[in-house]
Image (tube, rainbow, N blue to C red; front, side, top):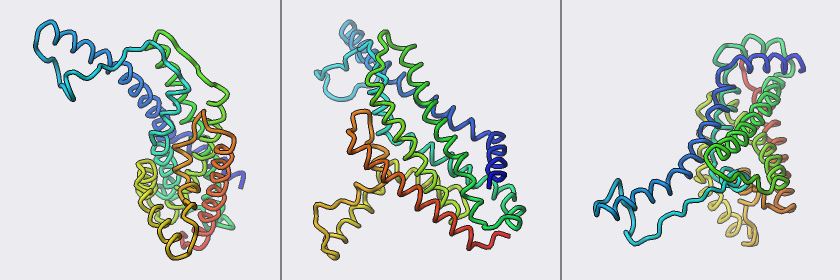
Length: 281
């Protein structure tokens, strides 16, 4: 098992995607902060030119009497990271990296060559989990560093914010991200392609899965006589991933960690059983 993990890590370090996805995360964070910094300044500049010349400059939306966005020179790192968590961008990029890691070996024939020498075969997907954890940690770390650097470069006043709360949220996000990786691992192992894992991440991040949760709630309430106070969304991975912030209390954090641990265990076991029964030789 240890040798398989080392082999997977060696292959991972030589994959371009291992570096491209975290770099993409850093670029996305910079663009988001730059747009937040630039938008009110452009609005105010356009309004000033319009007042002086009598002509509208650029694209105008909304009422001409609406208030302009205030220009601020303060950047709060913790508050922006909370917004980033709720955007779903982390979920999408983690899903992409997990799908790529899962399917890289199948694409290159690695699974077929080594499967006959490994028993049980379920070790093969489980050996990829340490690499996924490392990639997830790298993506989150780059996101924090990029946001901090961008805030310092663009704003006059850099405010760290509630760092202890942010640290707790980042730890929870790491576990939830690792659980998401195990879910993508199971789905990609079952479907034998990376597209299924990427689509799963997009569906979860965009909230489309809420339609399924709503339908399940209806079934539970109407046919299984479950109290309507019960909401299956409270036990979904995506809801905790996007709602866990620095302001989350100990109860919310504990439930998020518990949900992440259950998903991690169940999906890892599922991947183990799927590849064990699958003819991959």
